[in-house]
Amino acid sequence: MRELSKINFDALRNAIYHSSRCNYYDFLNRLMSLLVVAAGAGAVADFEKFFASPALLAFVATMAGLFQLVFDFGGKARTHEFLQRRFYELTADIAEAEKPTTAKVRDWEATLNRLYAEEPPPMRAMDAIAYNAAAESLGSDKSKRIDVTWWQSLNRHWYAFNGASFDYISDATTKGASPSA
Picture 1 (cartoon, rainbow, N blue to C red):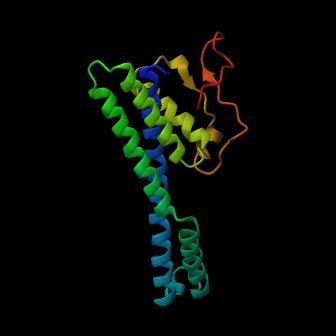
Picture 2 (spheres, helix red, strand yellow):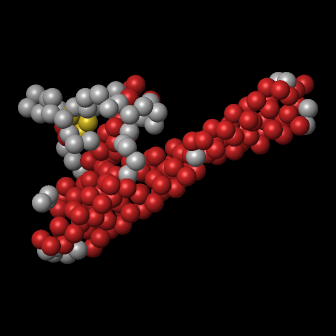
């Protein structure tokens, strides 16, 4: 059985992670909708005098609509929104408990594990960024933060970085240790 503070930390980290993923997919969904409407209207309204040919605008509208349909950015945003809410509810349950019993801590750990089963595969760089945000919000020592390169940060929503090593930013005593991110 894990410590209560670790369960709370993992719930907070996951809530932050899913909040970021939800915002990202909501942005993509709105962007694709904007492109569909703007390019489609532009093609119909004969805006080619100002921007491009109607064929190009129609192509942009079609491709944006296809991306939106095939990748379901709105649906993915709702999945992450649901998970974000569930993880925050877990942190709230933990915060409300004055003196949790061992059985209650086991229940929270089981809830956390059930939520893990509902998650899509993680984007590890985004998870490391969420780990750092959770550590910062709980006042953790800076040596317990995870090193995320600028390249990993830039591509955190696009590439899983499954083979990458995410090490702690720390002194020599913890250098090379890998967190469970």
